[in-house]
Length: 411
Image (cartoon, rainbow, N blue to C red; front, side, top):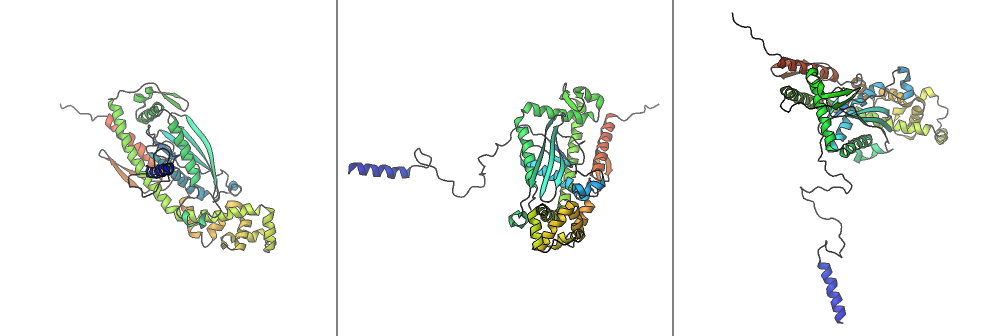
């Protein structure tokens, strides 16, 4: 009897112990979370506390064949690809920023912009269903960190899921590429990253005064290494630093134009992706014998290819329309799809938008007047032209500062 009472007492006492005490298993986290408490996944990387590199993401290489006769075989609608070249760069920029590892991340029309690390992309495939890109990361010193390919297949019912509204079906390839680049930065010691930032500073300064700064760098082909550092109080270095701040502000303004491009093309591009996913799936089905058995059952086997390619892809989501769409995609690829999309009632307006904005690889930028140190520059043309004019303007400002006004002595 006494032993039973002791056991009962010990059991009751155990129930009263705090959850963290030995011998008592902790339960799942429950209850509301305060505003200052962040839930962190168990496998999430620790917050980055190293040197933050500034990244340049040039507009992607659209992967358009040089010979227009090859467009159809490659499944390329050239205007669309040029629009995608801008959109993909902006999407990769977003994912790089989300890693929390980098400093400024700028989309630029050219690799001539100044940064510590360059993440350069090329479009290998984009069918609405399948996307494949190649990404190369090269630092300002000329060392290539990686060249990797990333591919993804969009799920068949992606557009039917209301939870995917506003989401980019191609996002996984950009996420993986950004995470790989971020991981490479995490693996490098701070001294190496700091050296890259110094090389970037001196290469920028060298563009304004080669005779003053080139002796601090050793060039071997496309590779650069530091040989020495200028004095911390060097007035010419201080001058180029001030100019580089202005260059950064210009690049920030340019990002608004790229963001506007994405906003302007979103509805049209999404419509194409949704349309293309259906046709790409149909194409794969059209390549299987099972499809032709189903087609015979639907009475489609006697239809001529010309009738199939006449725009039936846009017919809707009924069983026969889907089947016919599959035949069209199988016979003509994405190029036939683009022609169908551009001529359909649904896609005509969207196709016009994509065609207009994809005429040139460089986005159009409204003319802007920029005043710096009492001098005004009018920048006109597309993004590439305005970038070129801006750099010429900075060199003009730097040169004017170096040449003092000549005073004529009185006689």
